[in-house]
Structure formats: structure tokens, C-alpha cells
Length: 150
Image 1 (cartoon, helix red, strand yellow):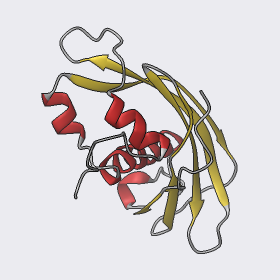
Image 2 (spheres, rainbow, N blue to C red):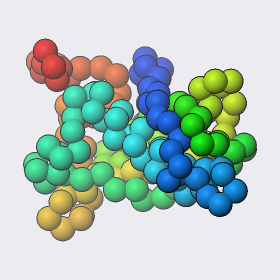
Image 3 (spheres, rainbow, N blue to C red):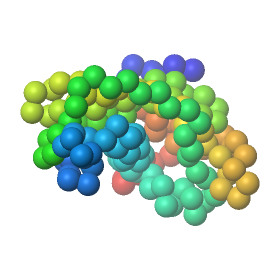
């Protein structure tokens, strides 16, 4: 199912460090994938779920497929805004649309889509996303449940 329009956009801020750049002084292309991974993790945390807690409960999220397009370079000390918006929510997977923008001028640097699968930690077989988490990703609270942090 498509994610409903009521879901609030999410953005994670990060800074480009020397270790993120290549010999030309620009962000090495694969590091954009790392920035987007961090934004997805922070999106989960913002919803009240820590990856470490979920792993302890036998649930992992793994990237099934990734697509990225590069538009402009980021450089040392740039502050970046990385979005992580769910555009498709299925029984055992979700699709994120992500963008990396330079905070100073809002220039689009990189964008992509990521299909993320929910799997069992013990055997890496697909499993259903728990209802409470599905509702959190869908932007609404499950009936009779208290949202994290309340």
C-alpha cells in the first residue's frame, strides 16, 4: 500500500567530515549511501524504535535494493539535510524515498529509493513488520496502544 499523505516528512542533519571526502575534496559517492542509512535509522528512532532493541527482539531491517542518482557534490564542512520518507508500506517491507540536500542553499545533491525488508534475526527470513511499527510508519497510532515516549 502507498504510505498515506498524513505522514510527516523527516529530515536528519549531518556534517561532512574529512573522512567522508575523496582525494578531490568532495564527498566520496558511496558515503551518500551511509548518510541515507543514518537518516533511516534516525527516522526509526524518532518513531520510538531503536535498531538495537528491535534486533534483541529478533527483528532486523535489511536493504533489499538501492537506487541512487547524484546531482552535485558535497564538500568538507557542508551541513547536509537527509530525508527519509516512506512511500510504500507492505507486509514485510517498506520503500523509502530519500534526498540529500546542502542545508545552506537547499541544493539537491543526491536522491534515491531503498527497498528495506523486515527479516527474522535468527535466520534472515522475511517476517511481517509488527503492527505497532507499521502504524508508526503509516503516521497513525494503533488502536489501544500508547505511542513510544508517552
